[in-house]
Amino acid sequence: MEQWDRPSGARCRPAHPIGPDQRVRPAVAGHAGGQRQPNAIHALPAVSLGRRTRGYRVHVPRAYTPTRPQPVVLVFHGHGGDGAGIEAATGFSQLAEQRRFIAVYPQGLPFTDGGAFWASAGPIDEGIDDLLFIADLLTTLQQGYCIDASRIYVTGFSSGGGGMANFLACRLAGRIAAAAPVSGNYYPLPGGCHPSRPIAILSVHGSADPILPYGGLAAQDNGGWTLPAIPDWLREWATLDGCRAGPPSIARGAELTEQRWSGCRSGSTIIHYRIEGGGHTWPATLNGRPTTAVMWDFFAAHTMPPPSTSTPTPPTPTPATPAPPTATGSPKVTGQVAADPAA
Image (cartoon, rainbow, N blue to C red):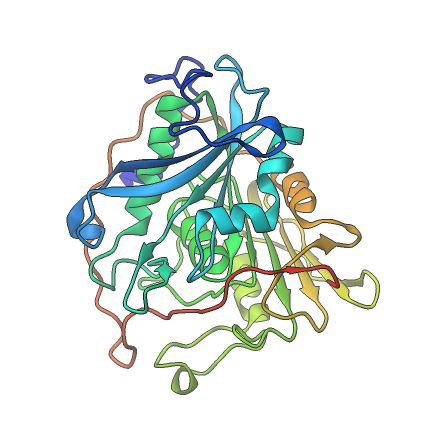
């Protein structure tokens, strides 16, 4: 287990508590009466394109109290997007008010095309280390809020959903309880995916996605990067989680097919929703329910084993891994999240 992949105990006496008068700085009115704030943490310039800080947004529900451990949901924007956009598009801040969790929206770094991007295949572009960023971000949250370390979840869209949710499930399973990527890009990670424990996965993908095709892309058609087909990626996770049964396909109306793997190790499971004819979007609903609500119910059913009481050792930068010889940098995916009421 890597040193930053160790869970930290829930802090009901935060080391640097955030009081009610400090949750918004500068003051920003939160959705549904809660509080949200743009924030930054210290960063190492060598792994952050020369920047000394990395940004993120936090929505703290009105019912938050520093004596009650709170779940956390990390929500990642897609390539070219930002934290404010994915917050507005998904509705996770409104759901946080209803279900009492803290919603966090990390911000990617700008890259060569000017759009914010995630180094979701490791530090192969300018040494950017987004794994270090998220590990530090989680530690910062646990120092400032009463966080339930057994209930930290990750979701996101496109390169945020597939790239970062999959990346964190593979590399940070000691701190992430479950992942729910939407319309993701599941490029193979240098060195492979070796989670420290089985992790529950819920995935959503449109069968007609024109940006990240359901059937994948060959390396010669994608700048030297092989994009796995969604069924192949799901089978890999079923193997990693030791699932013994599945996936039966269940039609949920004409526009949605559900697949489930069961008998997985340590209570993990894999659920996949294929949006029939769906494009590169974040669907507004799944089987007649808001997508965010479906995700939260999935998250709530999966918690980490009891964490140790030790605080994780601050991580050191991950050594840069050269890109495959046929690829130019890491794959970039354009297209921001869009709600799809028809899905």
